[in-house]
Image 1 (cartoon, rainbow, N blue to C red):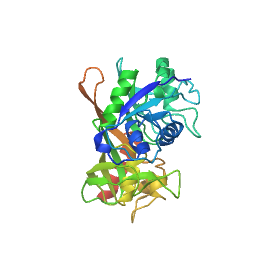
Image 2 (cartoon, rainbow, N blue to C red):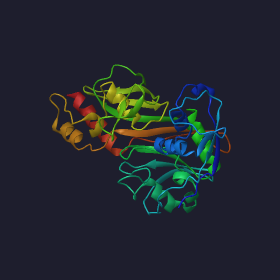
Image 3 (cartoon, rainbow, N blue to C red):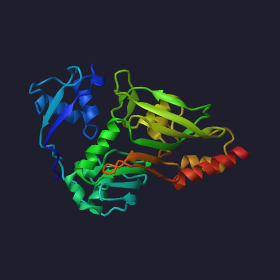
Image 4 (tube, one colour):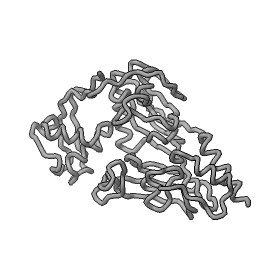
Length: 318
């Protein structure tokens, strides 16, 4: 069983004036789910100046929220001998290249075989940290860079960087369609009311901003760079699908495989067999929790995305 922080004092920033209390706290505590935060408010475990409020109550900013709860995981996360690709490590942080197909942490339908289970085997001391030190997540079928904290001080510092948008996360994606230029998508996201598995652009959703730039254009596809300003669930996938450029291999937001006119057999085979969203966390930049030094890591594209780009290039020559 993983012990968590016992007592927290959270100051609601003035910029959140007018926000619902549950939404404001969700933004301040991204490592916890919105439902858990709502439960704390309703139970009186989260109080403002000792007084109980409703999740829908609006904040004025500068309030101090006192959170008193044992913050325990309801289930035990076991250590499992699952290979992970660590590319940097010191006494405070660990940076790894997550492989596609690996769920970030245990949850409904995936109580084992996750990155968190692998981390607990790699470093048993991570059991003392929330989510085994995981600061942010990648979708199961997204590959690439992630940072993990190795102590509470580092975890708190990295979470604060995420909240202030000072951690830079750059992704490579291959999408359907011929993009003319890059741009910025600022559309709020929330759970799709028609399909609870999916996220959707919703007027009353949480603020979400994605910047994207064209790396290379093909006849019927585009290789793009996406930079997250916020980090909502499925953000890049939903945003790019929203503007008509869903990711190759994304069955949830892109639907069936689409073939360009006069597609070669090689291209048809490559698109048909690309069974995960073509999305890779390529570059990560952050301030080191102890030294304050700005550190950056960059990865090459994985083999499956390189092969797809190669086949798209060959198709364009004909």
